[in-house]
Length: 565
Ligand SMILES: [Zn+2]
Image 1: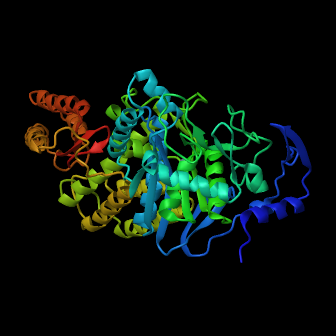
Image 2: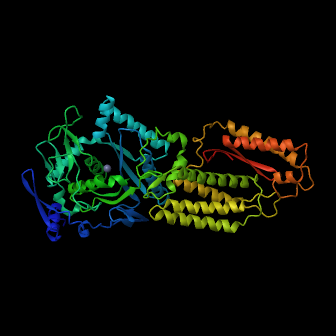
Image 3: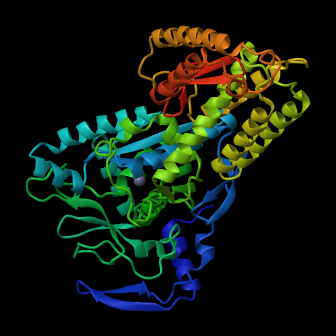
């Protein structure tokens, strides 16, 4: 049998041995824990390991501050709630980073670990910032919110962030929020003030307040004078004149910030939630308060089992959060979705991430290396790239080892940098063997390169990096490909003619240019120079010609993304 939450906490308070203090607020003597009780008794906040389906994945849980096995209530089903945007402005680069990182985590769970992730995201379409901005711009808060909601969804689509199973708007859920608050009051955890505000009574849950963030002292939301305890937070706010409002048992008003998430998550998932995610800046007070409300409402010991928080995005050299909007920064103009996703993959989702030329260039060059490998592997398979004999066994071995180490890294709190490192190591081994040769003695082994290529594409696809996406390149008609194909074919013929002059030309395994140095044919040098100039001039346009002996291969890239081999 479960004791009611209020009773449980009272017993715990008595047993906890904390010093009890008193103060007078609004004429009422209150009892509270003093701030000297910083060492909050862990027993009261002990995390209960869920019973159910062990995914084999370990994830860092903010509730325990350590990695825990990810155990889901239902087999292969993950209920996942995330705090979405407050739609009063353009999305920040920092927001984009957080959403992409969690999108990567969800893709890993669903595509690699075969978990059906049911993701619900709230859209905060009423709050102080929306009201303030709508007054500044002289448009209705609803219109302002809808505009930015649409823009947010477009940005997410551009970054290839999969949409949640459902977006839920706060304003579509006001009756549910009112009912949720009524039950919290009924359960003895909320109170109404003479000003028409409703607050959560943090003292009513004793030491359980601070489950997520160990509060060093009394920390409270500023501004309100009618609270019993500085830590208490608004469940319902009486509306000021000319503000949007809804009817409630406590008069006209609107929901407090935190209550929307507890209500909406509970309306879909009930009293138990597997995973809750958000940026680290939401841990306190937002997630702390969500936990308090939800457990007070459901009278349960543990509402959310895992809290996952993504690290901040920093401008290099600055401690301030990156707050430029995607739009102002022309971010989506300068970077492709693949580049940004790779940028996110190169750090762990929990880490702070430095946004700098160096870090974005690293992402670009990593992507470029991957693309070049895919291109070379295809050229080899097609017979366009002649190579020295391949040591096939080593590559099959490396591929198999990579597959297991990538899976292992991702099962260890989604260690994407380690996984990318393993993939890059595989590519390095592949490249080592794709050494051009003019004469081939040994057997060809195209299959192993096909297997490596498929794996690299597939695993990057798991991360949402689509190596085959042609939308990122302007011309999708295919005309450009055909033109480049003809041009390179023509150039190869010219070059072959220019090089096939000396006796050693066909035997020498060196590159064409070295042959040219050894056997300059004055009348044909201009042809070679013209070929080099064409290659050099096309590179900045994204057309990369590679001379391999007397053969040439080519690829079209835009910002490091392969278009065509
Ligand atoms: Zn939330």
